[in-house]
Image 1 (cartoon, helix red, strand yellow):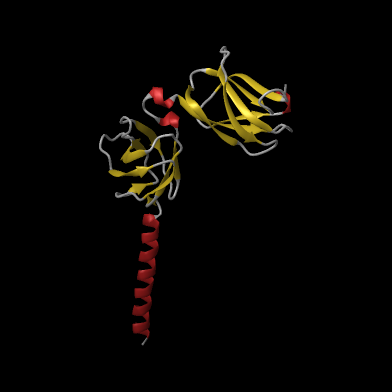
Image 2 (tube, helix red, strand yellow):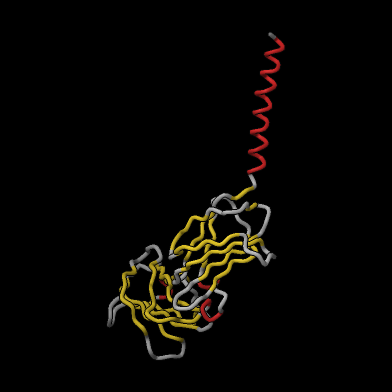
Amino acid sequence: MSKILLITTFVWLSIFLSCKVSDVEHEDLITEFNVINETDSTFVVLRVRENGSTSWLFTESRNFGYGSHKITPKYTMSLDKRYDIQLETDKPFKNTATMSNITLIQSGEVYFQMSNFDDSAIANQVTRIKILNNSKVDFFMVSIRESGSTTWQSIQGNFPKESEPVMVTIGRTLSASKKYDVWLREQSTGGTTAQKNNISLTQDKTIPFGQDDLN
């Protein structure tokens, strides 16, 4: 009887240990991660490779529009390695955006922004900014001009006092390599204004306005 009990105990112990070893062996594997598209473009191809390699581990073709996209790797990926992730557009032209030499974590997030485009002309494009109104005045219009210019582009909106950042979509493409003036107005004519001059803009950059900026 004791012999049977000893054998049974050994079998269960072996199963338990094998399960624990299996858990340890898979702790450093990546079974999913998320790609966050924060650009103005819709991508249609995703590629992943080990950094330093010229061969892609896997390619996935589907719509990667603005927002989050869950990726389930088709090949084993490890926490201990570094990777290159590339997205490709097909309209109006083929362009790529690449994140190179990055580490991944299980269920982690990889953010793609305009600055990640491989074409520097596209990487420098600015089509959105965020206005953070920390003042005690409600504003209803933002105007933008290239520093030194006398021509403003005005965009109506709602920028409540002491609120969260408000996204502004600019009707034309600006450049991250240039300087701009940004002007908030309480009314279309007259009223309180706030202004920042000769500042650099990048895609989705938050521009804070406080009491010191009021005119």
